[in-house]
Every structure is written in structure tokens, then in C-alpha cells.
Length: 447
Ligand code: GLN
Image (tube, rainbow, N blue to C red; front, top):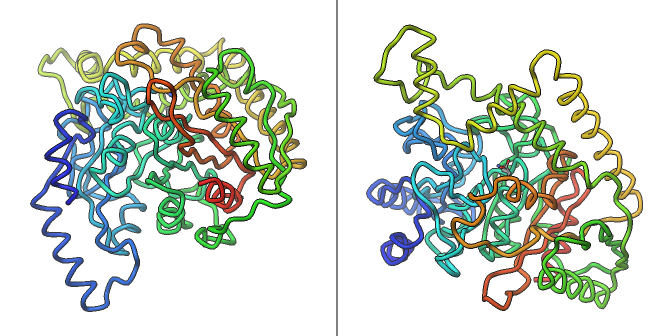
């Protein structure tokens, strides 16, 4: 049924970089047999999933949306893939993304733009735009994305699906191609909150192969699926509902707040300090880490190598010039600059200090509130081509999502309605570290 949908939709949407029907059908038959024999008992056994193309898989290429890795097939797989396979998941393909997860629209992919299934003149958001569009277009039942600065939550909001970024350290990053290692987290994308809770339960685990993985007390997220927010304290940061927020998104947010109040929660606005520092801090830290992480793509160890040979330096030079796209180069240059001698203290170190202060502001907020209610993005999905013209404006669009990454917090984005153009509006709930259950409970109540 999903392949039938892919045949109908994929030529217009371009959600996938790699699809392998034969392999998926073979796997589905195997799992079917396993279910009959009682080997697979999980409710998600046999359910088809799409995987963002920066998560390593042995049976599919892992391109990161880049020419640099166009023909790269890893010889090992990510921890999340092992977890999914252990319960009998059927992987149907790898989804499109902004190159190396840098972007907010899925327009920087070497493999073409992904279109928003609700209106193909608009972007699906990014960088996990392929994963969210595939779920929205019913080309797969659920998908995995990665979120360094909103890349699960923002495209989920643009595509009208539910997406969650877990607490940093909850899902193993082993086998996720690193972008900003201190911010990256893999998370689930589905059509509803209960699917997302079920998938999170499968992929969350302690993994000694990821040095930042955390042993949590509780991995049972589906227990939180009950409708009760009575007594919950919900805060709306004043700085999140001011200038720059689209009126229709604002209205949707306040309507949601009213619903929560009616259901017995206490909702109020509060000052969240340091919001204005979030964008410069994020783009300094993320670019610094990216410039270091992407140094490995040098034409020797992985993927693309230039045809032009002119000594070792020249080979590095040509390989990276030809292999990376414009946005990736911009980040590498920015990152190398803020890490370079003489500027390190002024930029990178300062950004780390700001990051610590942002975390502190959230710690204070969570001493009063259980949950923070926020937009996922300032607007609904922009038209294709609009964001590429003005990268700075695109960076500013990350304002509501990046703080959760800087502070390591979990966040969930869910659809709450449509704007007058018919495009989905998504609202975000942010929780304290390890409090995914509260988010799931509040999101499920609203749904
Ligand atoms: N838009 C942000 C960036 O380009 C977030 C990307 C992400 O979360 N991977 O860095």
C-alpha cells in the first residue's frame, strides 16, 4: 500500500533519495514469517519506515544529501537501525535532507528539492524535510529524522505531522553522521502522538558506543498516553509571541493555550531571558563543530574524490570545492573562523558561555513550569526559492527551536490547524531534561 502511494506521489514530492522496493518486499516477507513464528511481537513489526539519509544503513547508501557521499554505503549501521530491526521494522528507503543537515528547507540537497505534500509550491521545511514529507504524503508510516537546531520539529510543523527531539543523550548518535555533535539528536516523526511515543520507546536506549549516551531511569514513553493535564503549569515565553511571529501562528498558539486552561492546566506568560542570544550562539557553536566534523571528508577516507590531481593539498582542495555545496562551505568557513587563533576567545568561547546561560534560564523556567508552549517556526512553510535568497533570514527562522538544542531539552511539534493558504501550523512543547513523558501527555491531550 505504501509503495502504491509512492508510485502516485513521489515524482511530485521527491521525499526519498534512495528507494529499494525489491529489498523492502523481501524484508517484509521475512518479517511476516517472523510474526507468524512469534519471533516479532512488537506492534511496529512489519510497519514501513523511512530513514533520514544521515543515519547509517548497511543496505542503503547514506549520502547526507551531498555529492560528497553520493556513492557511500556504510559497512556498519546506526544503533537506532539495529533497534528498529530488532523489533521487525521494514525500512523502505532513505529520505532527502538539506546537505549534511544544514538548512531549514531541504533545498540544499544535492538530490533536488523536496516539495511540501500540502502544496508543492512550498518547501517541506528542513533539514529532515524528506522524512516529514514522506510521512505527510503517506509514503511511509513513520520516519526518523535528526534535530541539531530544529530539523525534526520545524519540518514536522510545515508538513502537519508530529515530530520529537528527545533529551540530548536519550537516543544513541552512533551511526548518525555528525553535524554539531553537542546538539545532534535523532528522533521520531509520525502522524500522531501515540506513534511518536511508540517509536521513541524503540529507539531510546543507553549505548556505550556513544560517549554522550545517558542511562535513563525510564524508557517507557507509551505509559504517558493519557488525557490529563489537570494542574500542569504551562509557560509561554513573552519573547516568543512578539515581533516576527505570524498572526495566524500566534492565534493558533493562544487557542491551544485556552484548550489547556479548559482542561485544567495553568497557563501564563513569562520572561525567558537570553532568547535574543540564541541565534548567534547556535550558529557559532553549530558551525564550529561542523567545521571540525566535516574535516574528515577529504577525498581519502570516504566518498567523493576529485578527478583533478595536483598533489595532496590540491587533491583536498579540489575534492572539497567540488564535493560540498554552498551552504556547507559557508558553515565550514564560519566555523573555522570562530575557532581560529585570535578569534576563539571572542566568538567560540563566548558562545559556549552564552550556551551555559541559556541552559540556566531554562532551568529557572522549569522550576516554575512543567512545560513551555512555543511556536515551532515564525511562519508556515515558505514558497520554494524564497529562503535561498536570504540565508540570514533563514537562520532567523530557527529562533524557536534552537534553544532546546543548546540546552539539551526535549521538544515535540504537533499540527494544530491550517493557515488561510491551507498550509499546516505546528506548535511546539518544550520540556525539562528527561521529561518527554510530560510532553507526550500534554500533546496527546490536545490531539
Ligand atoms: N536550520 C538549522 C541549521 O541549518 C537546523 C538544522 C538541524 O537541526 N539539522 O543549522
